[in-house]
Image (cartoon, rainbow, N blue to C red; front, side, top):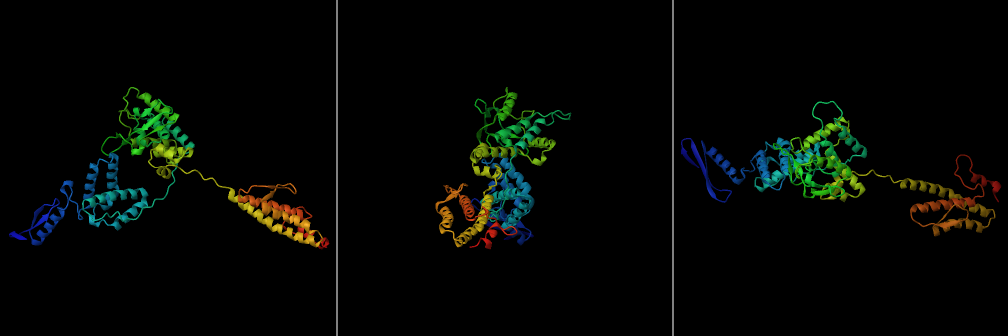
Length: 483
């Protein structure tokens, strides 16, 4: 610390800079304490690499980190232009409204966790997207030594409520196709008449299973009509970036999304009509395009589809372009398997297709439990009634009947359990039956007991449970029948 002149103080020190070089750093102020504070501030700002354009440290505001991270994202060559635009949009709409006035050291794990919980109350997607952006941003700060740890790493796990994919029914598909075909036809309405592009787009998305960007990016050279069925190659998608016109990207969303699919004949007919309109155009001309020849923007196609459905009174179906993709996946999976559906959609794993695209088939109720309960109740009633048979045997022996007769009757039940045979309905005839299910044992026991009771009781030929008043069995047991 040195005093240069009246009212002026200079603080200086030697500081090892970001590149390893030791340099002298000075700061001047009107007081000694102010000069020291100014020097400390200068030293704090010299810790980062100036080649990145931002001096990041724990005292930097989150808005400075956000600008530095977006600059780094724009320089990355492994990210698509659409992905970069999504990061920018979600940063400004989801993250910065809450964190822009905080310093990096003030963004703690607890604060981030509370923020994500609040976002999850609104929707799982908001919370998940916010977490992704915050995690990427603070990983960038960690790589540049602005923070000692990533506060997002310790936050709680986001739990998503499982939602079943919903595919369109055949009736829904017919209603949508009819609405697209008849939209603004035969009406005296102002404005230009529909050119049928969205109507044809619905058919291509249904039969081809592509995303709306992939369907709008189809070119003349992507269609092979020399084979049957027609082959269509998905080799690109449309990208929408704020401040730029819509353009075609020469590759789809992922590497597995590049594929060749066979389309049904009704989709092939629509594509042939589109090809006839551009017969004199070059091979790289798009199938769907505006009046100026530029790509048809996905948001314009979505808006037109919503108008079509609203005019037809189909808003309750909540149909989006992705509904056609789920419908195709569900139809193919039910006809074949999930692997074929995943290949059709361009998914790298069938698990994604199963969880997010294939609607579960309605469960078929198995009637077997009800039958088993009915047989069990019948068997239980038969067993309770069958006890009378043994009492009848004792009574007949007391009446002087031979034990051989009774033994022959009771022995039928013993033979039934030993040989697994069942009564076939004809008197004194038994036939062997293979034991294929526990229910067969119940049937055999039921038939045997009924047969034995019928043989033992002189009259009537069957024994009934008491239902008010004396039963036939009690009448037979009266003293007049005794010894």
